[in-house]
Length: 253
Ligand code: HEM
Image 1 (spheres, rainbow, N blue to C red):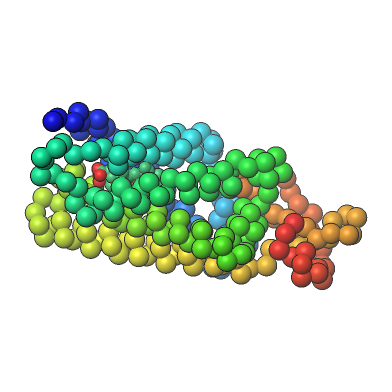
Image 2: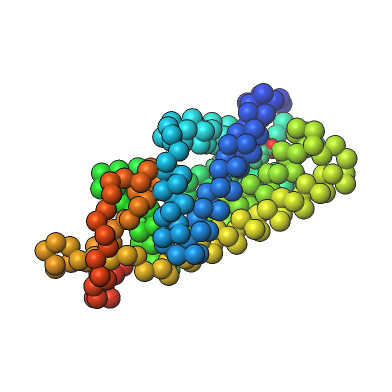
């Protein structure tokens, strides 16, 4: 029985291109910027503020990241749930199965992560600082395991996808080139996973900057310089001397 081919070659090429060019490049940039948190919150905030100064950032994010992610994910779901033609020898390879499984598992994490860091009321309405948002999210054991799983899945998915991409676009025509692409992909996965998890540990262990609220009865963490990677925002008054805050108030604003 012939099972109709839902994903044409053209769709597969679009999926491949969106996976590597905007999304792959973005993932490398995103993990690299997050890794700056290893140098302390202000290091991360300065880089975030510089990125926030890019003109028309919101439009670039929508056209260059959100849209390709939606397209890539939709075609990805089609491919991952497609049945091979009965009797066909062309069952997916181990690498393809891994690629599909990591993509499907990654999807719910990405939806949550985009909501929590971009679209939640805390961020959109109250302009919460990204460092503090991440600090809160990874402070508990469950939070850090959840985020580490998402980061490792994303790193694995990109590195494991590199040889497929290289083959599809004619960069790995010979077996030695294909092996080289697989090795580069493996190293890429490992490096991104290590950098990403190290950044999560830095988010978890750093103490957010604290000031006393005007009423003096609560401690709040505030963002200085960088608001959500969207621009420097209004000038802040000089930092007051650091108050001694109760340990319980330190983790949550
Ligand atoms: C950080 C986000 C993502 C990046 C950087 C990314 C990157 C890639 C790359 C580079 C490939 C290899 C393309 C090729 O073989 O030519 C790929 C394939 C694939 N991706 Fe993603 N992807 C991401 C998110 C997702 C999501 C959310 C899904 C959800 C379904 C998904 C599903 C797939 C599938 C099923 C394939 C394999 C396609 C095939 O077997 O031909 N990806 N991805």
